Figure 1 (tube, rainbow, N blue to C red):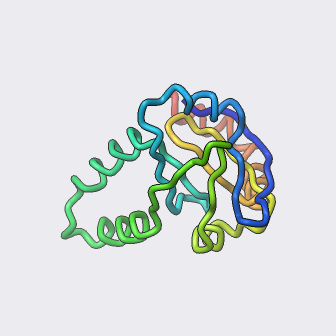
Figure 2 (figure 1 turned 60 degrees about the horizontal axis):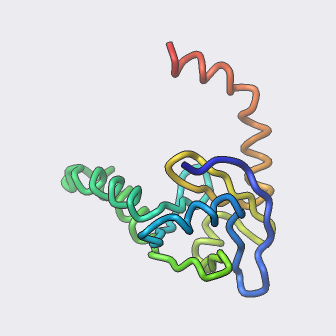
Length: 144
């Protein structure tokens, strides 16, 4: 559903504009709610409400008596916010999410099928450089 890599800059109010292709998809949605939270590998995750509800159900079904479940759910859900995308397709990043993802002004927006990831430009560059050589190796292991 979400694909591509896009480079953007936060404005003075810590807002960014979603890529035009994403905004066009959102126009067709009846439900325009999104959720943003701390992601993995140092980025932020942005989910459309339908995907959020699916993932939330999976995480809620895990046993809260397990320490790892409590730990993950606390950090994941405490960072979550329902967000509004304004009429110009802008999203405001809250300061604690910016801090988590080490975002200053330059960001990379990455479509990863069921979610959108938001990265500090430097962190995305580092992740990509460190992992691009492993791409084929990982593919071989995943698709055996």
